[in-house]
Image (tube, rainbow, N blue to C red; front, top):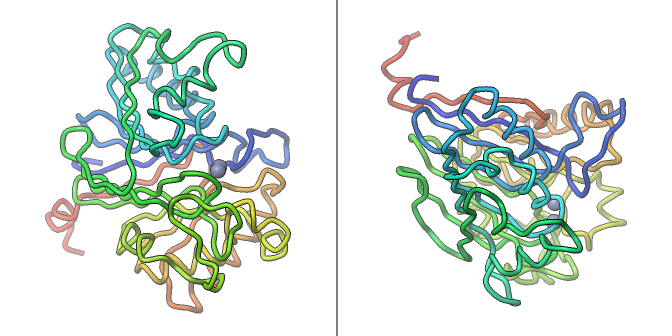
Length: 309
Ligand SMILES: [Zn+2]
Ligand SMILES: [Zn+2]
């Protein structure tokens, strides 16, 4: 990937880590996606249990010493935060991790996070890790991270304060909306209620985050029947993810945050149906995120300089 970007899915499951032979291909770890470009500190979407495997990969590649990285945290639900203390590089002095995440009503993000990572819930606090974790409160913001990356964060509809992100780096764009509820969800985040909207309504902020991105990583938790029973959970249907991708002109959609009740065979069927729908409505490519899947993107100018065929 000379000059390009690698996106590796280390955790793709929603709600809770889970295990079993029926989940072996897509995986049972919760939300964590690493974005890497050569020679620069990595950027990670969410701190779910998949973060542990990213740490193991860095140790294997001997890149765990003197680690520096950035995290774009969507929200504070368990399936997005539990991996932090199990990230190997943070158990070495000199490591730094900058965590950008949703501003909380209860106080600074770092203090609120430490509220659930302290005895008796967990043996140590973030401050007791060998490395240094710094928290940054964000909302509807645009800010630089790492050395050359641009980030846009916007409130999206879920249960509690939740951010979606757009990352632009090396000429490649990614949007990450891991937990995103469509329609009239009961308890909403700061993105506001849309009581008068239909279930296929796509907010302007969501279109703004996803506009023409090379890769959209989007909530795909429910079938239509599950959504009807659980619409107050703040997630969406696979069809809604395909609809957002089409409306925003997305190149490639990765279905993400799979329901723990969905086995590999069911996800195969869901992704096939999503591909058919996308074809029918003139949308882009669709894949289902799976643990260990790595997607590589060439920088636009590198592609132009490459094989003219
Ligand atoms: Zn979640
Ligand atoms: Zn959530």
